[in-house]
Image (cartoon, rainbow, N blue to C red; front, side, top):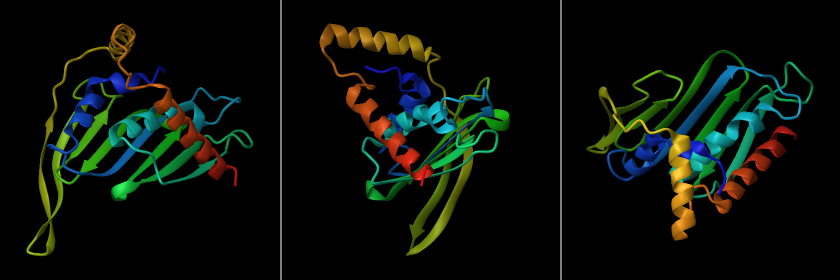
Length: 203
């Protein structure tokens, strides 16, 4: 079991459980994890920030990407990207992108999950009302695409500390032999995606 703590956040679990239900079929996911650094010299922003977002996207989609592409910019230090954008293509025409940077004027931790029936926005950097559901999107009516656009609702969930939930889950898995959400297979998938993205950055 690895410490991908955001998989144990109640908002992330709510989004995962909404796939195929109020969210409908998954279509697109994007994530921003931005701040004004701590600048690192031993790793770039991809390796510093993106593992969290890759882990969440893998958890929600439940399969591996077909293609991984990435672009980045190294402004402050040579060959160490301060900002990167990683593009992921999955089966069933699901796509995702991840924007991370430590060269940004304010803190932003935003996850947007778009489905056929609506869209979730999870902003963990907000003090409250972090999870919202927007009843927005497009449907075919008589062969023509038409937008549906209703107001958002704040989604309430139990305010359980993710780290405490992760520790409880670990304890439960030790006692019962249950496979954890963030097992070694999941960790290896995340690592492979990071390595593929780094290869694209280095081209």
